[in-house]
Length: 319
Image 1 (cartoon, helix red, strand yellow):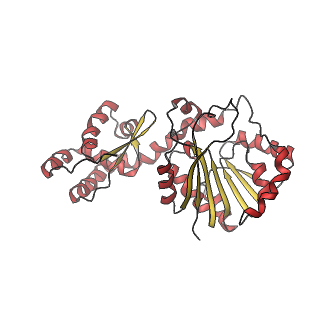
Image 2 (tube, helix red, strand yellow; image 1 turned 180 degrees about the horizontal axis):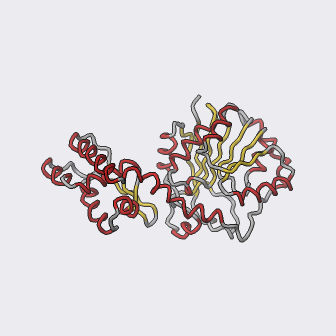
Image 3 (cartoon, rainbow, N blue to C red; image 1 turned 60 degrees about the horizontal axis):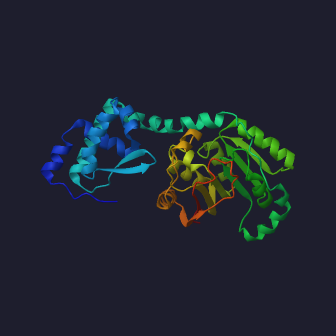
């Protein structure tokens, strides 16, 4: 990333002598925001927002990050008292406009298409293959330091639950789609899996976190194809860290950065993550990054994501 040279003070004063730019800077301290989201927050057109943010980008006050065809803007962390004073004034202005209070709701709307996608019954049910291998999985148990509880967040139709149930004493499968949980329940019953409890909800649900913490925390929290559906992946990963016991691990399996915009039609909020982004998210959640590696899951050729790159991140919650 190219860092802009510091602006002369006179130019900085001129740039910040505009209420709209101050509001934009203040809003972009709250989260990475797209031009469309900023336009919604300030009730302006996208071309107007682009015109007003471009000088801030050129000056290095706003940092841009690409996600497919989208550009997200975040206020740079600059130790400049002039910028700090400007941000304070911008927050006051954005508060008076009501824009600051709406940031959370606007960001949450990123998940609308994802929710609609997963609330729609799948045309073809997901088939869990490999049930014949289940009797052999317990031979892996001695390799796991602790195996009292695993939590599978975003379990969907339970593709990984039979494997987890063979390795852990107790498993909780969490998903926000009741339709998929119903199919998952039927499949587990057909397989005779008895140590899995399904729960409708999300990783951030306080009742789930309280229940798991009362049990001493999970030895494993699995996030498989979850973060790219989250409006704020940092919140989902922070919740996973709260579910995890000290010394336990959070395992993230998700797409690496790609440019297949068609995946947005399947409810994807993000087009994958760069390895350094996953590392930053893990560290910010208080987890120690043990590894972030590419891997290639064996998916059916009919799967829409069979050709996408994947990353596997192993994160440790310090004791």
